[in-house]
Image 1 (tube, rainbow, N blue to C red):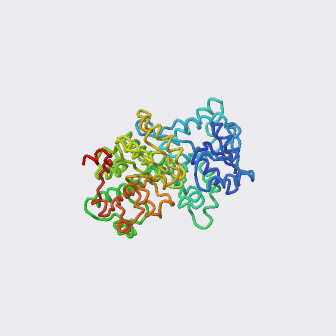
Image 2: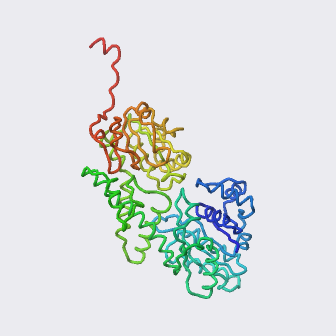
Image 3: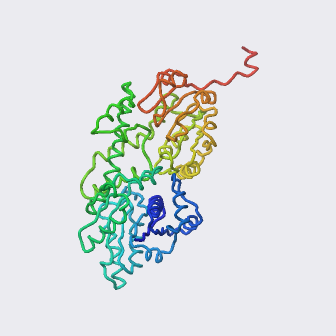
Length: 477
């Protein structure tokens, strides 16, 4: 079989790269000609560990190529993956404009049987709309409306570990409906993923609507676990408990497990926020409510301001004259993705309160600056008090506090003595609970985690130093 992937964004590039690594001949299609030229020259527009190496290897071997020619790409593939974006609309629903535009393009160029695979994260019922859009174009061309089938194959890729997730999947969800091409479609999808099912079956077969809903259910469940732990952490702060101990205690229960039980300053990215909103909207459009998912969203939005709240409890709401260092800007490590990143909320709040902000991220700096310019387009003057540092230690120079927002590995074991020497106040607000409160207390560093704290954070004097008296004042004294 030959494969065409329509959409050369995050999901499309990872899917195309990994399928070519399995030996399939892959064409990646995108209407952005500048992006296609860059890919043809070996550049990769996104940061994802291992992706460039896989693309380079398979491009050299002739197993993957890139084009903006829709006719050529659709003619090439026996299997056509739709992997374009489904951004949130104003009401929170998924915008299917790109998906349905691709479907219409397929219908305009189809000549023989093709298996169309929805890889994009889409609401329940999208396969029916894709099928209708393709059929409409075929009928308009005087061709049979049954010249294709549409199946659902949602992606379960974690940014920062996408290559490994694709090549070593926990499960492969495939939705195929009963119909004219049912047997053929199931066989083709089985052949496509045969490499992953040799030792034990990883493919979970179901109907299309169940497959579409499975993707949303998975992300909503994971998001709910995170928000639950964040609520427990906030309660632990009030009661003087340690959420890390709680995490270990409940995670040891085999019914619960340890994954996604880490408290922090909120989740971000392109999946959890968008997909929980879309799921709530889907339910609402059918006269149903999703109380747990709605609460998950609410808790997460509040959690993004928790570190600013903790800071103003110590320093007051007016942060004029304060310098706050920020480590980590991307919504998670091993990516440059700034979509819904907590850092965007935190930095805007700090700037609005008058603080100077010096931030460092090993990868996401340029994307962060672009995102902040968008966030502050109504208050562009605030950016005068924001700077991108060239290193983590440079960001600390003269800082009254450090906020850790992304758990990059190079932040895990810093030189705390060197940090104390650089900072005006040795105060760490740890949004990812990387550090040991007791150890930092022994070093004389005030610490405030999420659901974890030491006594120095309560006792340290955070008042601004008064200006030194001038010579005349000294003589009068």
